[in-house]
Structure formats: structure tokens, C-alpha cells
Amino acid sequence: MADGTITIKRTISVRAVVTPLWKEDAERELTNALANSDSQLAQLEREGQQVVDEIRRQSLNPLDPRVQEQVASVQQQVSAKRAELEEQKRQIIEQQRQVRELELEQVVEQGQLESVIDVQVGDNLVEKLQAAVLVRDGVIQAIEGAL
Image (cartoon, rainbow, N blue to C red; front, side):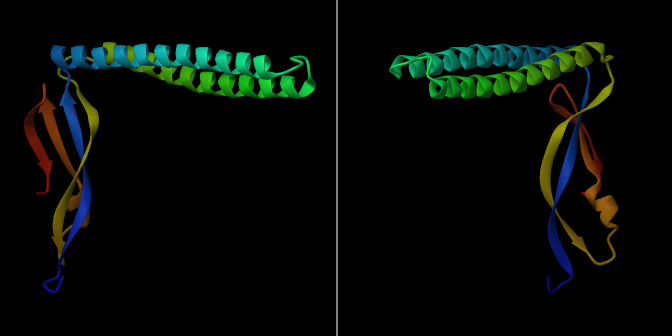
């Protein structure tokens, strides 16, 4: 830092050109995420029922109010997790709809990367922080912004 230069982290946007291959890959990823979500929901239901069955099995009197409270508590936790998973599933379905509506050659935000950059007195910080990489089917087409 003695020379007036410091190294900072910055975020680089990754933008992708929508191509048939990109749409295929995006659709496949979302379909897999949807299947995973369905699997998690089924597993949640099975495990929740197993816990409830175990609570009732270990109890001398399944109708005891304390047992009923435990069962209700487990069912409430399962219900809350189910709602969370169902919301994730709705979001995935919405993403699928959006991917299908994208036009070829459209540029979309695909993600972010981090890098480091040296800055020094006199640099325009805003310009230095603005950077993006444009890719087409995984191949870099352009690097935008300050290096």
C-alpha cells in the first residue's frame, strides 16, 4: 500500500446469450430441481409419519394429551417444511415458464463470479467495479469493463 495501490474484491456478472443449447441445459437443470423437490417432499412426509408412529408406539396411552401435543408439534413442523418446499417448487415452475419464454439471442444474467483488482489513487472506482463476461454456450464472447 506504500505505492498508493490496494487490491480489492469485485463481483463480475456472467451474462449468457440464449441459444437452443442454453435453453436445453436450463430446462434440464430445472427439471432435475423439480424432481429433487418432489423427492424431498415425499421423504418429508415419510419421515414425519414415522416420527408420529414412533411417538404413538412408545406411549402407553396414545390418547394422552401430552402425546397428542407431541404429535401435533411434529405435524406442525412437517407442515411448515412442506409449505417451504412447495414454495420452492412453485418458484422452479415459474423459472421454467420464464426460460421457455426467452427468445433466442437474448442476453440474460446467469450468475456472478468474484475477482480481485488493483486500484490506486486517481482510478474511477465505479468503472473499476463494473465488469461482466458474456458467454455463448459456455464460451466467452466478450469481457466488458475495466481489467
